[in-house]
Image (cartoon, rainbow, N blue to C red; front, top):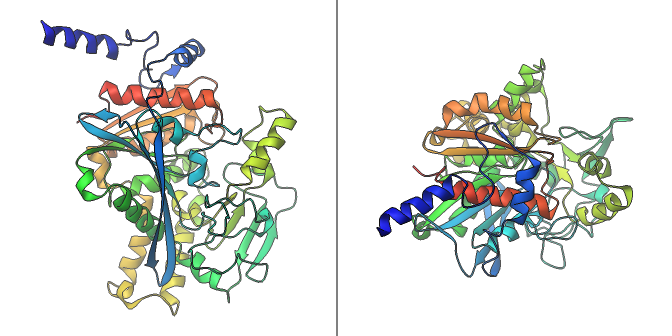
Length: 443
């Protein structure tokens, strides 16, 4: 009778009877009562501690030097799924870096730490340019560099931070920050080293750095022993989707996750805006200052917001070349490709296949890769998400679902874009673990 007993226990668990709450159905919203039950649920209590490793990987792309940073949290008691070590790979949001997965602006443990304390290996990726190699504490923090002087630091061999001699500032008067725009921009000067490096920080470069990072964090000998799920927080999703072509995961988790560039431009068109493809965002840095931070923290009182802002200043607080592929700015991507092709530093090896292939390679990361056909995608958002709300999620799904093996959407009542608070982290993390155990990602 033991096999039958085990089957009934599993059936009760998957139906939600093991806990007082149930997984939301496709497109359904997890209500306030279920949220309260999740916060009281002890099914996923901490199981142990973890160790942290920071690795720097130097590489060349488009004739320029870059350093990719990957931070891995390895639990002392690994959680298994299907007999494999459970691994979550996080791609950071638009103005942050890997460390924001570990500590929130309120000073609490971030989602990466929450998972690691429950046995999940967490691999945090930082896009090239976002790690401050001059940080004295080794965390990559930008706190010691004034926000109005910050420009991407692409490799650890750089001798000193950039100065105003390397860039120029452009401001848009009386323009408020939104999730997709800024009021302050900085552009590298054409005769600077910064110009070459920002030009070479293309979608190809970002993805190459990510691939090298994952090959380091999850070597080939461990890949078959690991159940790997990608989570792109906010703009991170735009890069973890095309990454599947170079390093295929076992599925996609989601919270506040952006989609491919194609999905982005499609939903803008549904809103009547057909101009996105023509946007020239190459070689532009967007400062994500206090106005941007306030946009995402409207529910906070002013004293708390100011306190959190001081903590958020550790983050890069800027966006750069990732805008172009994330928003499928074809004009920008074409400009980048042509400027590189006409430059005197693009290696001959990259010219070998010709300009046509070079431009195809530059635009390709904006499309869903064929590898998604073998993978399940879980897209969870808060109903009050300021950047990627329910209508946007549904529009993205229209484009992405035909390319996936399985697609499911869930929403959480009243939650916002960022997992800033401990309650929101616990709810999102609990949902992820329950979905994983339900078999949603299993083939």
